[in-house]
Image (cartoon, rainbow, N blue to C red):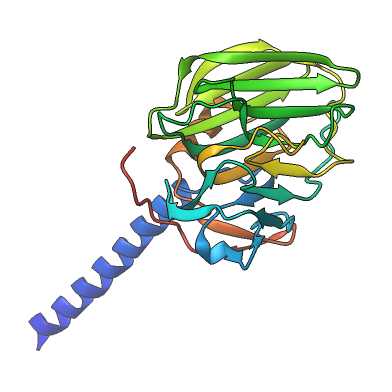
Length: 267
């Protein structure tokens, strides 16, 4: 009897240790939640009809056209085929002169280098203050664009072309007149940005178009996150390696365990 009882305790302790290790790994694998304003997983489980759920800020988006749900970097993604495919978002937050970061995973086919294309913007017309993150004309080079009223702007592109049919992680930041673009957790470009008002509190935002019913994306997007802060290199690395929300915010003060998304592709 004693050996059997000992074995039972060994099994119980082993299970506890395994659960503890799994929990720790899950916490380390979560995305950065400090400053996170909106989070669109683009998973089928987080899309109801044409409504795309914002897991953090409740700023749900609306699908326009017929983007296809495909296997993404984490879980599912939306594959956009050009006009009119996009996701229209409400007003996310008033950026103004404050720091911000914009993040997504994208996959751009090599045969999709057609015109100007965009991943995320808060632009609605050419008279607004706004930012744009997308691709340079007829290339797969990432383009980051900040503008104030009357066509006063700073725009620049990355050196590398990312229309290679592979998933890539992009983070674009802006604080005062400094802007950065990270790809796959590596800083690839740092240039000057407009330091003044970038709007965001008066106009809707968009995924996969330029905000002026043009510049529609040909390619896939996954895991769109918007922050009201500049992510540090360490936080960008954490998000690059993350598997979604290990803890899911409920309200402003309490936290509850949520599902951890499972990576379904090689990177």
